[in-house]
Length: 341
Image (spheres, rainbow, N blue to C red):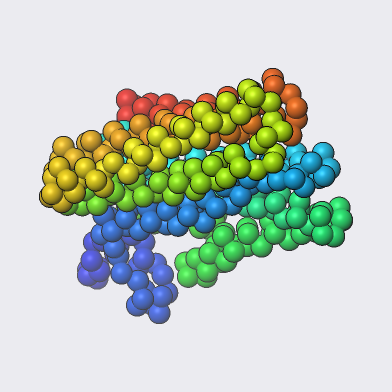
């Protein structure tokens, strides 16, 4: 018997789903799936930006010094994990510019799809760390441990467990790729080599979406960094750390300014019209903004680590490791993929 199902449906693997599930699924175009997954990453960044800013501020609150040494270290580790998660979530923007050259491909969609569940893992642990610190102030050490464990379990169940269970039932069986889609069954069945040069209008939309992915994290940090200057904990810091904080504040301010340039440039120079030159310029501004963003975030992480450990050496090493992670992921790995891809 001849298989009369559309080729896109056969390639996606949706024909293997139960009949009642297939009735509610439409095979999306590649550009739509990429736009959706970028918007999903943006949602996660928006969810984490305020927590990151509040965590930075917590180290300068008066009651921070009253926390036990263990809780202070837990809070610092939690902030570090949130920043790792933020770095992972921002990866699609430089990857699309440097590796894909603003083209859309199944490989890019697969990469972002694999990235999102990975980025949620350190964020879940960081959230549990925050709950532990809050629980210790409220219930004591045992209550804090219980709050942290319950928070971690809840986050993992809601961010992965429910989706995995639903996907397994819909696919008719257990598949690890539903939990962490390292290539994914559906992605593997599609043409991974498929690559398209989208319309100019779509390119402009995508580069603006990518800019909006990075901007929320920068603007939230800028606001909280400024508030820190007005807090009592800032006055008690050594002058050197104050200079580092101000330099970090300035770097985040430059990053925010660069991220806002494309909107004004597109409106004033091109009068809202689409242009290949604008796409290239916006991409370069985005990469430049991420250079300053990495510096600003790492600089303030140095200040935070010094507040916790009192050790200049440990603080410098921690900040350098974070900066190396940002630059290595955003620029090192993406340039390697561009040369070898």
